[in-house]
Image 1 (cartoon, helix red, strand yellow):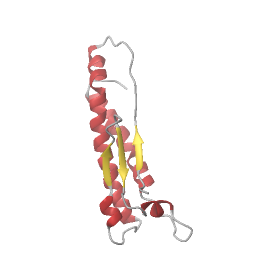
Image 2 (cartoon, one colour; image 1 turned 135 degrees about the horizontal axis):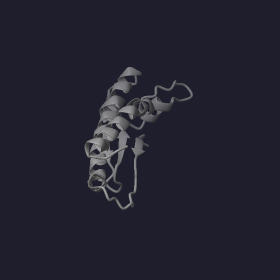
Image 3 (cartoon, one colour; image 1 turned 135 degrees about the vertical axis):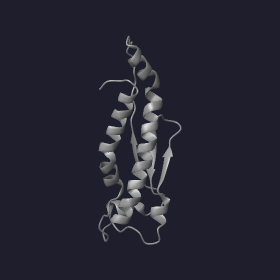
Length: 130
């Protein structure tokens, strides 16, 4: 069993746009948001590693070194982020005899404001309005 934290953003646009700036934004929105999501996923992976160390879930370093960011090819704007060790879930949620030392969920929560700000900035830079 491998534990992964995942997040996804999906959207559909089917409105006829008359404004050229909005037409350009709509045409490029997918690639703009994909860049934002890729960078955000990498940042979350980095923050997850920091939190693994912070909460003391490091013995051999296997969980720390196994954190990976992977784009799901079948879905646009979907990334899977997390450690690949089978026991990482025990650190995240704890066991009957071991207290939880969460690192994945707090990492995502820590990065959420940055992700939203980056998406907003990318859209504004591309000529859109929020």
